[in-house]
Length: 130
Image (cartoon, rainbow, N blue to C red; front, side, top):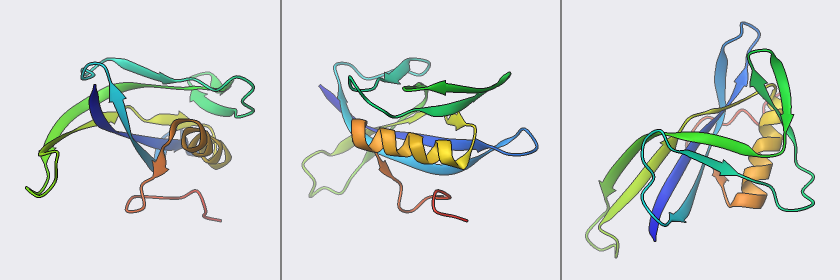
């Protein structure tokens, strides 16, 4: 198994039809093989899960209960020599664009509770603004 860091931006649609980062989530997961650029990864809910959120589609918001992303970047880096793993793999995925800040909160809660993600404490975090 190959352990990789996963990084996903959660973006919100703005009034001018653009999107901006609400937060970045990350986790460490093991894969049977190293994912390649262009491959998709889906995070499905547990049976009976009550999480749902609206993703931003070209025709408007669409309610979903899972997240799906595509590998945009694969990178490797080396940690200090004192660490047991000398090299690590990091995967940056396509952003998940949601309809509102409330949807971003729901998505972040879903990824955290059901898939072990955390919000990047050093990055943008607009989930608790206003």
